[in-house]
Length: 203
Figure 1 (tube, rainbow, N blue to C red):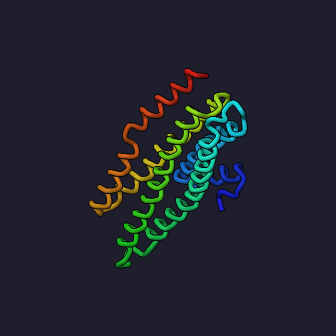
Figure 2: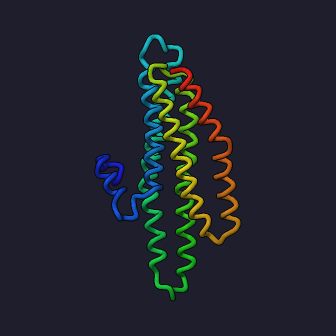
Figure 3: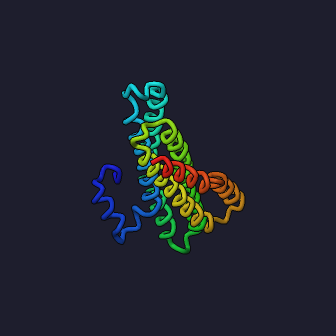
């Protein structure tokens, strides 16, 4: 599994001529890094007498960040599997009467995987707010890096959702998924920029 490889090996694979892992898997890794940095802020807050008032909240933040990190790591493999299904569908003989349907079904799956990843990234962004507001201020910069990583992952997911939607011929599916993506993105640039500037001002 890609998540069990060394970072160097994963990056070598990413840089290779192999189509997978690709941008979707990279987005999942960025999101997972954002979640891990939230976990770091929480870990460096719990157990310190000065932050006892937020101890329970930091434990909850730790647990949620760890859960999201694992789900985002799982999205690496999900993205690879979805892309492989798309490629397999396109490799079907052109005279196969099921080819068009197979391609469309695979494209829908390849849309839903990065869309699910985008949902997780929005959750990570939310956790970064809490980490920055209540966590140990000595690691406030890590909360900042975390929110930027999660935001980059979200925007990357949006690219992958959009490229697949543009090839899908089911108007209802396209409208529903595009609507959800727009809702996930709505106001997010401004939100992240505000948190980024807030963190910079406190450093």
